[in-house]
Length: 417
Image (cartoon, rainbow, N blue to C red; front, top):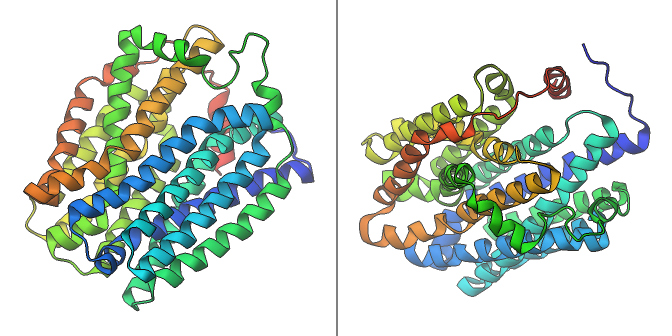
């Protein structure tokens, strides 16, 4: 068994701070999602109009993701994390105010700020996590993303409880903003200065971040990468659709209470968390192609039951299958994209597939609201079902080109335990 190097107090505090803030961001995201029915009712808008409001989150998130890498390379991760935390807090407060004042534009603007903060933090935290991995000689990123999923479970539970007692959504989100602010201050103080700046500097201008626009576009000439991009599009769309619409899907599509809608989202978040922490042994034993194929089919069964079942109880239980199936899609496909020829090529491939995944996750699902205005939200989810079925047919593109080192497996398991 591989012996892990000991951590000094500073490194331990660094890693703990990253985990804490990812947990806090998960709580904040799930708190918003769990209260979407209450916000929709407060704004008194149609499903299609609510989809338009949700585009604020998509626009802000994509803007944050697209600029974060360059900002980290120029200034280092710590100031970018600080900016992301500030935007998260500001966004939550503006959403709270918009909901309390019943102003759709205010909620849209708050979601744009919130999404920009999430996008900035997403890239910066991955860079910090990779640096922590190099320092420790053990995986950090899997647990980092698991903390976000765990945070969504906590946020969903909190949202469900506060919905049940009819706690005002504005005060709820304001309290979450205060908690995120506290976590952000502690995290920024614990993160070392200049992490991403040193790692991103290179003489040819093609350091971390994908190697420029030309390299980003050139990698798509690889047919295998195109197929991987289609897989991540489908899997990320399935995950994002649940994040954006699941509470409303149960309330409007199956006639449940708002509390039951929040409970359903909590079940989805628990399933996602379980899948991400427990999927490692399956990947080692069966490989990414078989695991993602099975995942897509499991998610498709869950979505089909939610769409076609006349029982709200069965539909709620099927959300567990939806979450388990969608949990590994994004990280496994991005990992497969990284199997390029050389470091810079791999960086460009990962950046290209990640961008496609984020676009599908953030921009695609809100568009379902416009379709739902014509066919209903349940029927609109057939789009997700079709995409999952298509992804299951092309998962052969995920077969590993090279076997992973055997020594890495115990390292991952020991970190998770």
